[in-house]
Amino acid sequence: MTPELTALTLAALLQIVQFAAYAIPANRDLGMGYTMSARDREPSREMSETTARLGRAFANHFESLALFTIAVLVIQLSGQNTPFTAACAWTYLAARVAYVPAYALGLKPWRSLIWFAGFGSITLMLIAALT
Image 1 (cartoon, rainbow, N blue to C red):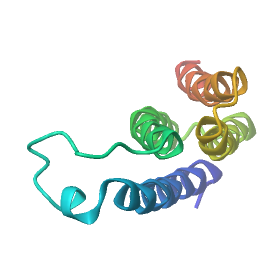
Image 2: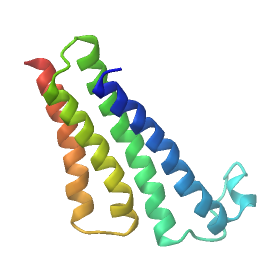
Image 3: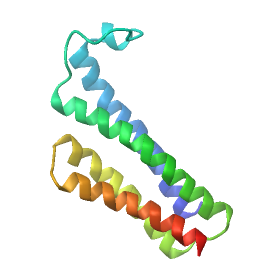
Image 4: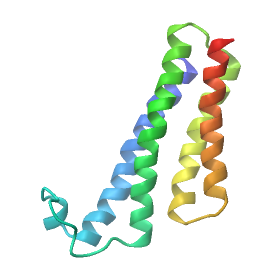
């Protein structure tokens, strides 16, 4: 497996870990009665600030993972794997791992800088595919 595909696989596994990191406290905060319901109404209780942040980080990773998947597939299918694209893929993964606690802890401006490192890595991979 190429480094880019390995990083993509690990990024998908990170998404699963993020789901658990969010779902467990959300069930505790909101109650299983609400979380197992159709959620047709607003919850009667609020999530903690940290749980809400974990939820936003989880959603953000879905958005980011879509672009990263495109970048990896373009590189992979065009056979343009290089040490540079591998470094970009690993940088993306490292940034996404660091993003979760940075967001959960409300670390400003680090959360945004970490996000930008991941987004920049995707951008560089896509540009590399065009050159």
